[in-house]
Structure formats: structure tokens, C-alpha cells
Length: 334
Image (tube, rainbow, N blue to C red; front, side):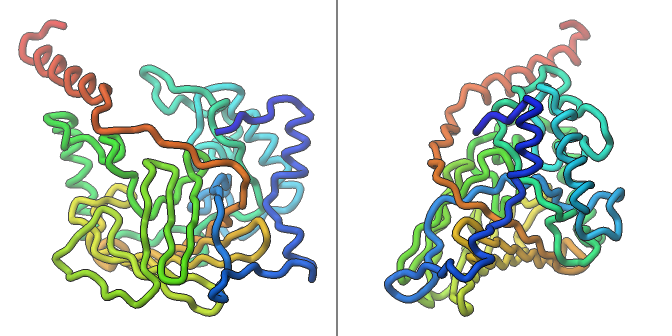
């Protein structure tokens, strides 16, 4: 995590410099590096600190890109929206900038740590990470998907902490799930590569996906995993990874994902840019597939340990606090 610029000079520098355009890829001097087996070399640390929102905001409906003037104004507004307040995660930063308001606290009861601890965000002129459908919006959910989402929300509302299994997997230090599309918070990836395998190591929760490239058969349908069962292959200079067999209680965007098929495409387009395209296909949840494209930026930063663990004493406090709320409800006293 890196601190952001807070001076006027920093604002100007952000406006001029953080747009992630890989200039070296636009001339004829850059050559795609390859491993000994001839495939593109994707190894290294890649950061997803994009400020672009996942879905296109209503204020930008019908607009694929921003003008240079609109982008510069957005960056200034984003700086003003933070103003050393609580940390802004994911799309919170851009949405607050669009509304020209100072964002509210992520946790209004106790507050959160401030924006100083969040990575500097990379701005570009795109208005959504979603590239398909063309309107930049995630397709509508099916009736089945809506029903399951409501069931999950209702259970969490009525049984927030009967036991530790009522708490989210991320809070229990198990996993943040796959795919993880969030930016700016422990959103670094390190890729390792051999002839027969590729490893995608995620900073968040130190999850490592070991993906065969050698034609290893997929698992039987009754074998289910938190991150699914992944198999990869090369399509020209693009690494394609298909994942199925998600566990029945694995979730994606607040819904179960056991019927989901995820197709990832990794394409190196410059010395510091790795295009990461993800297609979600789950006919039991969404009315049609949808795709996002995230430009991951190369960095010399290290991927540090994410020191969450299931012995975290925070879980004791969460469960004890809920027991206290139950006693209060029974006795009418605090």
C-alpha cells in the first residue's frame, strides 16, 4: 500500500502521469519477451489499481470514454472527495468524485483507517471495466439468481453471527474468492510460469492458483473447490484459463457460484501492461454472459504477506459481541 499525493503538485502530477498508457508498446522497439518454450513471458508482479468503475455509472451512460478535460476534472474531484477521510475501496472513489461529494465512512459506527494506506489509483479515460455488454453494465440477474441472493442476504440479516460459519469467508481468512475484480486494496498478482503450469499468486489472502497447461483432465463434477478447477492453454500469444467446479458455498458478488464458468485471457501488450480479460458465464444467475477487461500494470513492488489467519482474535470479539446483543434483547438491559 502506498500513500497518495495530497499537495497541488501531486494533483497535477496525477493528472499528467498516472494514466496507464504503455508508450513503449506503441513504437517498434518493444519485442514481446518469450520463455525458453517460445510462449510469451508473463512472469512478474502485476497491479490492479485501476480507478475505472466496474460498471458504467448512469451519469456516463452512452459514453465509452471521457475527454481529456473530463478525465482531468475527475482526478481533481477524486482528490477532493477523499480529503484525508476514511479509506475508499473499489468504485467508491470514482462514484464520490462524480457526485462531487466527500465520501461517507465505509464503517460509520467505528470508522476505518484513512486513505493514506490505500494504493494510488491509476486513472484512464475508460468509463467501465465491463466491455461486454456494450452498455458497460452487468446483465440482469435471472429469477433464480435473485432468489438465491435474497436468501443469502436474509440469512445474514437474521443470523449475523450465530456461529463462525455465518461470517463471510473473507472475514474468516479463508478466501476472497475467484475471480477477484476489486482494485486498490491488496490487488497485486504475481505470475510464475513453466512449460506445463502457470501459477497466479494473489496478494489478497495469499491464495495461489496452480494451473496445468499440459492437458491434464479436469476434475469430476463432484469435486468442488473454493477457487474452482482451472485448466489453461495458449491461444496464439494469449494465455486462456477456464475454471469450473466451484464449491456450493463459494460466492461471487454476493451469490453462490457453483454453476459458474470463468474464462480468463492474459495478453501482454507492452513492457508494463498485461491485459486481463474475464468472462463470467452462469445461466443460473445472469441472463447472459458478461466480460470485463482490466489492464494490469507491471511493478517492481514486492507482494507482501497477507497475514490473516483463522486464529484471528477478531472472530472471538465478533461472536462475543453478538452473544451480548442476544442477552440484551432477552433482558432489555445492556
